[in-house]
Length: 209
Image (cartoon, rainbow, N blue to C red; front, side, top):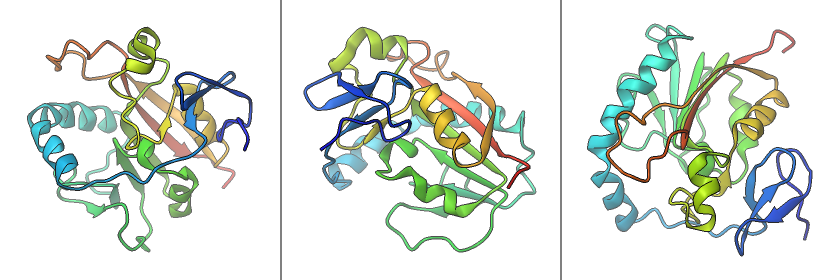
């Protein structure tokens, strides 16, 4: 078994008893992953956060519109959950049959950290990816709280991305970062919601593809 980072292949050191952090890109990863139970308890917890997420949806859409006029584009909400975020667009839930259509934009809201092998999303080949509401493992909250950081959430969060590791993943798959934002702090009443905990990133396919 190796301690190499799945993103940049550099060395990982233990951040907690089971979570490693890459010394190069800061990515957080596990050497073994459990299969998360997304049953009734998880779904009930998600329902409790709906009012807060609805405020975040407004900010997420506002940021996206700064870079992509998605209203008239073919869009896939990848890992759509309730489907409320982009209700008028196509939705795909993890574990369902893979979508076969071509899309201009693929959105992953609070999803990429749940995917064991993120390379699966690049088979869709959209012009744009929008990764939003993803924890930043280099955030002040993560550094301060370490193993007690409330966004570790294993086994639901199988990867802990940083801006560097997320950018590297997309660069290596033919996408350039065109926007990076740290939203939500003005909306959250939770005292654990330190600035920079969550990041939104927009990627555009390079002309080389």
